[in-house]
Length: 119
Image 1 (cartoon, rainbow, N blue to C red):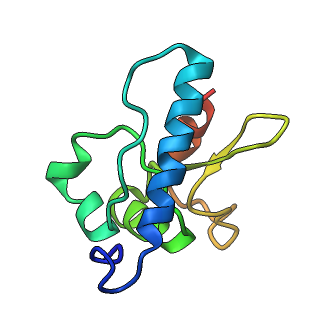
Image 2: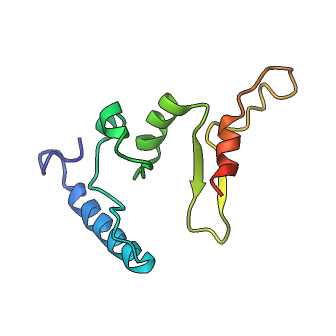
């Protein structure tokens, strides 16, 4: 539960400092005053309908913090983006589907289309 102000841990203090630093750096480099990042939210709160409507993107600190709710809510449309590469790399978020390839099964290609649109 994000440490509960030190009751369960204090890693959110470190994370908040990193968020502040990233926000300042990006704002400086991009000449924007828009809010870029907010303080950490635990996944069971971040992905509720009332919170989700306030954000366009979510950045997860750990794989399962973001992937489990993403797949539960947006399995057919989610994408992943690899950062810090010399190229823009996007991909569907649900795997290759080799188990159903070439079997004449009707597929949903929305996540594939979303990965291409991200460019």
